[in-house]
Image (tube, rainbow, N blue to C red; front, side):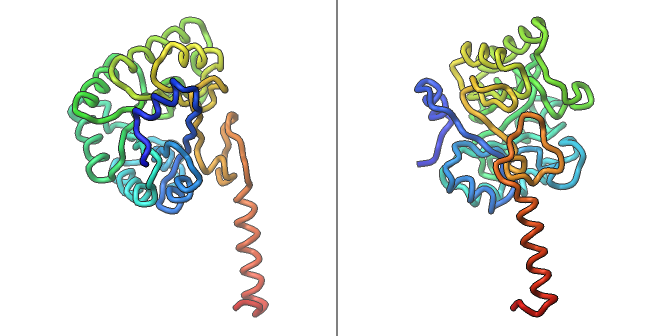
Length: 256
């Protein structure tokens, strides 16, 4: 049975950890789904896979194109679509149009947007009222890289209280889950305890209700690894070796 947003909330209540990874193509989506991943995020980190330095340049059209491919490979996992930079910040109407296209054209089940300030909270409220499930994202928000950099967020008491307030406001607005990125583990634990919806951590310690990583980081395919990522296999080396072995066999007339 396909996983639903309500199921994720039930899992939090039951103490079952939620496992999430990113995908940008059919093959990865199919493999992650077959491996039993609960939530697949079509992340705007697609921009990095396309050769950009940050997530900012990726467009809604590019995201929809790749999300369609992921969705075709997934039968069970919940597929969440990362709304890219400047596709939801201008107005509720813009957000509604972008999120609607993601659900209608790509076939995803939910969207994710960054931030927790009042305008974003109002956007979440209106999207949820329109029947669009929304995942929040606070802490280090990569679309604000030129404002925040890549530093850990929420380290001071004031900053921590602000993130707690944002999380509570996003839950009240109807978000079904919130990503907590690169914040102190004790703060993530506090937020997780205060919410009835699941928190999905990335660089936020072990007390979140689930964890997400960028799949290329997990597989050792990224040029730069964030400090909180763990490499489970080095596919960069494995791929390079396989290609070199193939080249040698072709040149030495051993293949075919």
